[in-house]
Image 1 (cartoon, one colour):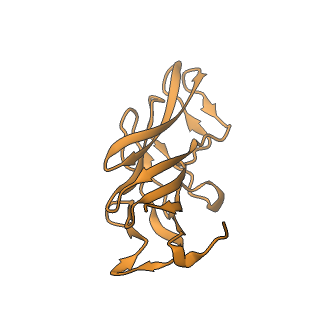
Image 2 (cartoon, rainbow, N blue to C red):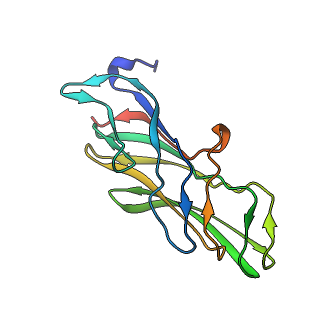
Image 3 (cartoon, rainbow, N blue to C red):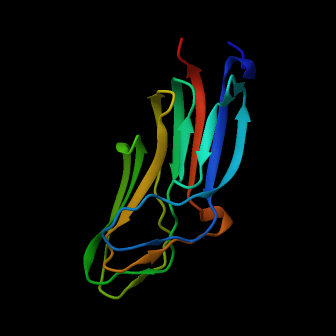
Length: 167
């Protein structure tokens, strides 16, 4: 089967355009701010995807099978508040309900600054329905508030590619 954009395949990507502070133990929606790219067909009445900048999510406008990939907010040189196991948890959500999760844990001593770069990633093939909203949340439990590193290579990103439309 060859690729034919007129069949309804397309992609969209959004990226964080500013640093975001993640308070210890809270799980806010990741703020994106910029549509990075969008390709594919225009459906009758609108685009295949809609970027809702006010709510930091992508709305899918055609039922089908999609590859959804998330690169979570990146952090470097963050301080751990007490000797503890630090959890960094990225949740991919559809209609505000988690559908996939990327978690990593590390242990650091009190007051230590971790110079390693920390960033979760995940991808999943999902059956999405027209009107589904896709976003992600992030939580960290360091004992301190962390500000994301918003350099070009480490900004949070959410990308969706349609693999097949529903018949």
